[in-house]
Image (cartoon, rainbow, N blue to C red; front, top):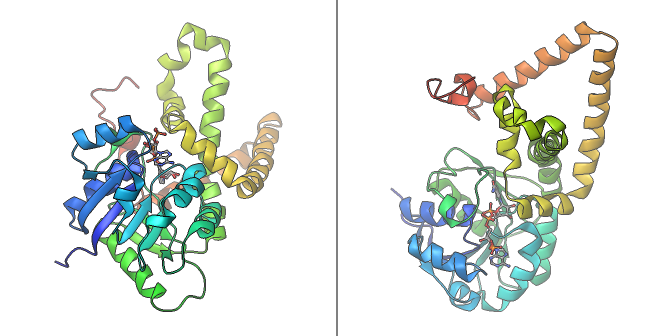
Length: 311
Ligand code: NAP
């Protein structure tokens, strides 16, 4: 088994992703020393109680001497966090992040990144609707894609730094893909950002409808609604920042989505069953492809325990 990729990593932001990273880096021996820092004193105390790693009281203590600093803060906080820690980064260190939007994260870090530090943005396509240090678990990244969006046309020693960071994520069980930041943002707009926007919207529409007051939406939620509520339970700060920072790609995708929705609306109005069948069968095919690609379970009802369910 290969030895740790890094002697010392600093994880800034000890929420779901930061705490999972700390647990995984230790469990899979990807780093010898794991140091965490969070701007919230309360989160720092909880991270220490959970024994996620060495919890530092200041950014300086966390980042000094680190071979790799990983920003696990909301996308909107990446710029100010990079600025606050830039002075503590050592020559040859890697500065990376896990932000769900890559172009704006890259710009924000690039502005602050000192010469001699390798800036390699990244995004793990893994997560849950939970937040905070208690939500983390070591296997979160297993079999998940980790997208790295390195700076274009670089030479040594930058390229070796990219390889080292890729090896680190692979040790945590992830599959690494290299992509251009703008392309990442366009792809994620449709696979992640739009589904979250739709979930937030459908939950808020249902909430506004009268029947919610009588408890009927909650009572009959197994009809499909509850799967949207799980997505809509995701961290509001994180998602506010995603939409504000991937505005163009999200708006473009939303425009296309609205046109397709209008076509379905027309088919329902005019009783065009053939069109509806065509669309629904195509959607089934995409679900099959996702299962075949190992991206989800084929178990009925997402593998929920049938005995415990009232469908
Ligand atoms: P989270 O559970 O809410 O954790 C974020 C943590 O960062 C919180 O403890 C927060 O403290 C702290 N923080 C905020 N600003 C900070 C700053 N300036 N300096 C240090 N700490 C700061 O969120 P998360 O789900 O781990 O998300 C973190 C990042 O991962 C985001 O960029 C997100 O886009 C990305 N991501 C998330 C998922 C997912 O499914 N959740 C998946 C992939 C990538 P306070 O609570 O006190 O604000």
